[in-house]
Amino acid sequence: NDLACAPDGATAVTASQDKTLRVWQAAPGAPITLKGDLTGHRRAVWAVAISPVERVAASASGDCTVRVWTLGDLQCARTLEGHSSPVLRVRWLGLGTQVAA
Picture 1 (cartoon, rainbow, N blue to C red):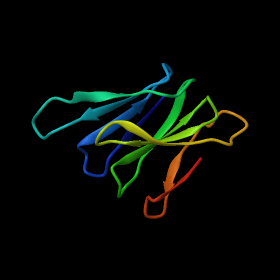
Picture 2: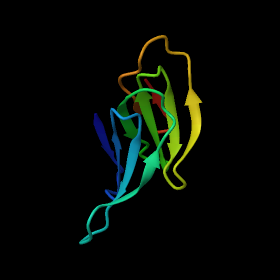
Picture 3: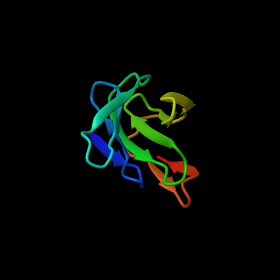
């Protein structure tokens, strides 16, 4: 459903209908490899964004949540609840320390 690339170009995160996100690593001259999966959403993941300053990603899902993930250890750092309908978009604001969905 979506793809986000880190500013350094070494990390990408994909969002999928299967309720997961996948973290990919790329090194110059080397093939792209799967670092791991991010699981926890209960419905399809519609959007993903990587913070320009932190090693975190935010995901928007049909389960009406936004999740913030640490890309170093592939863990959910926070689940943001409160939407009354599926969340279709997510973006980092300003310096990349606030998220909007």
